[in-house]
Amino acid sequence: MSKNKNNIKQKLKLLYLKIKKTKTTHFIFLGILVLSVVNISIMSLFFYDNDYNYKIMNISYISAITPEQDVNETLYTNVIKIKEFNLNNATIGDLVIIYDDFSTNEYWVEKIIDINETTKEITVTYDEVSNNNISYNNIYGTYIKKANIFGTIYHTAMFTRGYILLVFSHIFILAAYYTYFILHVKEPKKRI
Image (cartoon, rainbow, N blue to C red):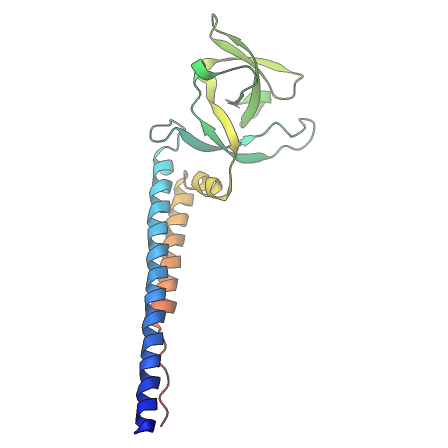
């Protein structure tokens, strides 16, 4: 009788471990699914606002040349977080985004050094040496900070190819996890 009780205890223990493992894998899958849906939703918002019109959110991401680089050397763009430019809140020393400065087809982060409300122009500088007078309408946004990894992902999602690639990567991760951890739950081997 004690051998039969030990056998039942072992079966109950294996069944408990299997149920515990199944609940954990399902809970993790549900967590990944929720995070994927939230991330795809946010990526969709940025994809919809890919012309930096700030229609949905007050922030956006853009690839721009940041001020810590030397103009006389090779310049690189960084993905940065920007918000909509508001003339009423603009002050001298703020960093703003300008397009096509120094005869390049790039966005530049430049510092405001003067605001002229009568001519509706601001004076900006990149390197503290050269100055440009820019109309308020030619400012794309106000610099917030350099983007983190999520900001870079959202910037990539603003373009069709990047958006499709990122959505498919979420689907692939979910399918791989589901296939490997949920469909192929290994049964304990029975001894003969």
